[in-house]
Length: 105
Image (cartoon, rainbow, N blue to C red; front, side):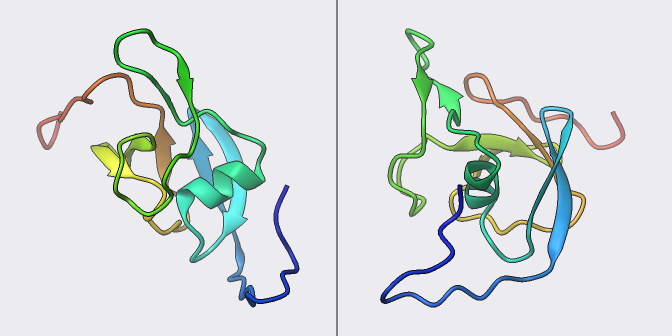
């Protein structure tokens, strides 16, 4: 599900790394966005609409909307469309506004 060749854009992939999403381990490429890694793994739903709880996919992919907000390494409201993937990241679906946890909790 990844674009590997493009007539204009050159893809420079980093090394293959592992991360978790909602408790399941996935692989992505270092330096790509979390959203790109999830998309490459076949995950299309980024969150639910706040009122009707309808699935939302990637929308703007440039960090302007809130369709891709997730909790990353315990920090809520991370725009995964612009956040770069790093080894061992823990990414979780986020319902609503997300919850900040106090350090050490």
